[in-house]
Picture 1 (tube, rainbow, N blue to C red):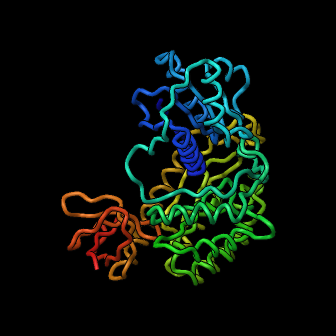
Picture 2: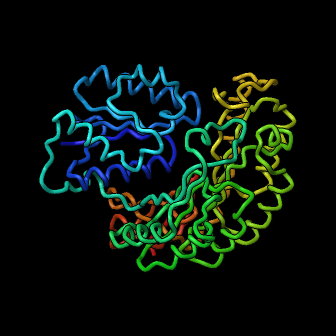
Length: 419
């Protein structure tokens, strides 16, 4: 028996899919790439925007029409946000809500057993597919911020943290298996707390594990623990010097309407502090353009904020109405073409900022996780999340952490020589 997965959305979704795959493998069900023939298909959905949800549901309908005999499973945020009548119309064999995700594989196999459809091998099947060298470690789920544009608190529920020791145990196993980078993921990592131990405590413990590998942090909401996290980055070489903050806007009126809970002045104090603590910090951020009520002057305030700091990457999103959120009913709607034009301006600024950041690495030694080798050249990602292409003799192996010295920049990628 085989299973395939189609995963939409964030790193948290991808981390959950890995756990689904592991649970199926332990039960003797092999994973095959999505698109190949399989007995079970799991669609792990995203609902951060209406467009994302609609894409997931279209795929579900299409798969049902084309594969009437396949056992189809729908999980993820769209299983929470879509209307019950919409979910019922999809023809899924199983819809898994958030409280059932930990037992998804077992539930699927129970349903198949009820049908008399289970024919499992006697031994567990090894995970299928290409060996990866970066692992996702889910440590937290849920959010209680209720920003006015966001559906996630409704689809993911209240904040819940994974036990501290369980996080360390899995991370230690991943390092022992040969993973050379562990990415710590969650719905809102700033809320991590277990027995009085917070995210900085967890990161400090992770960097103390034995093994040859580095720890990377995914997106972190500002306003709670980012100063302490960056202070740890300055002290601990195994913690990647990369921080991604969902800032969303550089205008106080827009931030207030978004329900973000901080001011631009507070953001600037945070950014000043963290850039001083780690001068070569890879600094990423999310920004939404064209939020209801955003004027051209307010948008320019966002541009000024971006121009003031050494951002190395930006994720830019034109605002999209999400039914079920307060902002969908706000007045002051910005025309879609204006939202897109403002997003395009920030994307152009992103490329300029990223190229400037890349040039700061010339002549400096960087650590690269090798992920591809082709025609004698290797490529991978630095700790501060820049693509790096280089040649070295002897050639490195995939999955190695190696040192290289950049001598040029190609767009926003580093060209380097191995050390």
